[in-house]
Structures are given as C-alpha cells and as structure tokens.
Image (tube, rainbow, N blue to C red; front, side, top):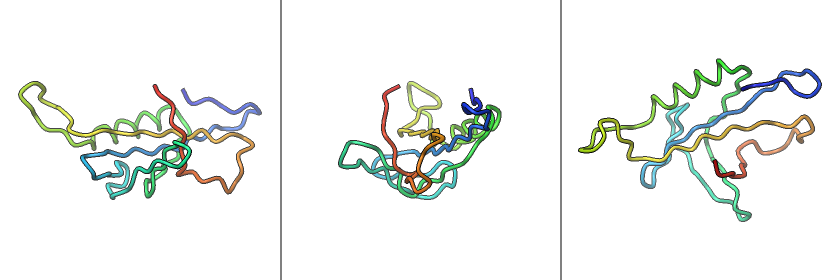
Length: 112
C-alpha cells in the first residue's frame, strides 16, 4: 500500500524491474539491455535500468502488471507458462531526509 509521508506529503515510489536470462539483463520497463552489478559491500546496482515513479497503489499495480506481462515465458513439458529467467523488482522508498545527490541506481538487497 502506498501511504503518505510522516508530514502528510505524498509518498513517491521509484520502481525498476529487470529480467535476467542467462547472462543477458533486460529492463522490463524500457525493453533495453541493462546490467545487474554487485557492489563491494554486497549491495545490488541495476545499471541502466529505468526508474519509474508511482504515487498511488493503482499506478504501482498497473506498472507491476505491465512488467510481469513483459517477462519472457514459453511452454515446457511441466508448465505451459514457464519462465526461463529471473526477475528483479526494486522499489525505492526515498526517505524525507535522503540526500538529493544519492544514487537511485544503488540498491541494498533484502530477502523477501
């Protein structure tokens, strides 16, 4: 759920979604190639990935539906819509005191 910030300000989320197929990485928003890099401190960087800003639950739902539909699938003997890839969805929730020069492509990873 997209909620408002502590002072009643709108909470904007920045979303990126990439698909990793073997050694190839594709931005599911722009359909361009990108890179998934691991930083020295173990963080995740999606280099070249589009960050799309959403401000409502509806916008987030529409964007996620669009990127799930863009994912490559093909039938296998066990599953008619099997995916031969991995998908990484990153949702950035900027804090109110985040430095304006902070790199939005830099990500920390958290298991779900």
